[in-house]
Amino acid sequence: MKPDRIRRIDNVMSGRAQDLPARLARTGLRSLEPVYRTITVLRNRSWDTRQDRVHRVSVPVISIGNLTTGGTGKTPLVRYVASRLLRQNQQPAIVSRGYGSQPGRPNDEFLELKMWLPDTPHLQNPDRVAAARVAIDEHRASVIVLDDGFQHRRLGRDLDIVLVDATCPFGYDHLLPRGLLREPVSSLQRADAVVVTRVNQVEGDEVERIRKRIVQHVAEDRIATVSFDPGPWLDLDGRQLEQKLDEPDIGFCGIGNPAGFRLSLDKLCSAIADFRSY
Picture 1 (cartoon, rainbow, N blue to C red):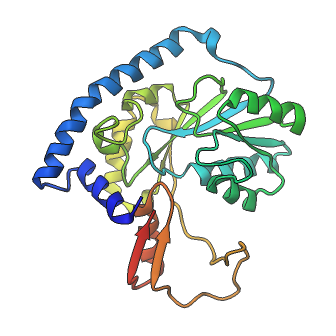
Picture 2: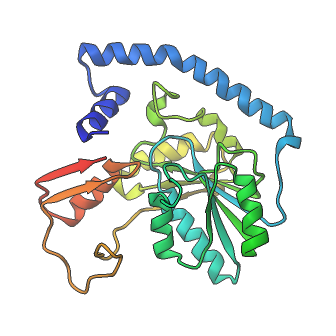
C-alpha cells in the first residue's frame, strides 16, 4: 500500500481528516462496528465457556499479544523474553502464525528474530498448537514463546502478556473496522500483565491517563512501562558500524507503527528530507 494511502486511512480513522469523504467513510465504518463487536463477544464467550477446546502442551507457554492492529512492539519483547529465558538455561522456541510468509520465504519478524537469536527455533504455522508440539518434540523446547497470541486462544498459555502502545493505546476507541481495536478494552481482564510501550514518545500525563484506564481491568502491580531506545547503526547484513553514519536524508520503514519509528528517527537526526512508510 502506498504511503499516502496509509496516511489517509490513519487520518480518517483517527478523526483528524474532517472533509466530507472522511466523515462519510467514518459513518459507514461505524455502521459495521456492531457486527464485529457481536462476533468478537460471542467468540470470547465461547472460549470462556468451552475450556475443553483449549489445547495444553507439556511445557509452559508465554503469550505476547496486543489489543490493536498495527505495531505495539511485540517483536522486541519476544526477543527480550527469549533472551532472558536463554540466560536462565532454558531452551525457548518461538511460535507464530507467520503472517505474510511464503514457502521458502519467511516474513520480516522471522528474519529479525533470527538475526538476534540465531540458535532459537522459530516455527511459523497457522496451526500454532501443531507448531508448539513440533517445537517440543523436535527442538526440545522447554518454554514456548507465542508471538501475537492474545486473540489465539486455542493454545493454552501460562502467562498472558498484552502490549499497549502509548502513542495509540486504544485504537481510537473503536473496534475494527471503524478503529484499530481487535477486541474491547475490557478484554484486558484476561491478561496476566500489561506492558505500556513507547512511553518515551508521549508526555508523562498521557502515560498516567493510559495507566488509569488500564487499571480498571488489571491490577496496578501487573502494569509495566517500557521505552524503545535506538541501538547502534547496522549495515544491511546486520553488522554494527564502528562509526556513526552521516545523517540520512530519507527515512523509510515497513512496520506496524511507522509513526513510532519516525519519532525515534527525529530524535537521532536533525533533518529528514523525506519519510516513506509501507
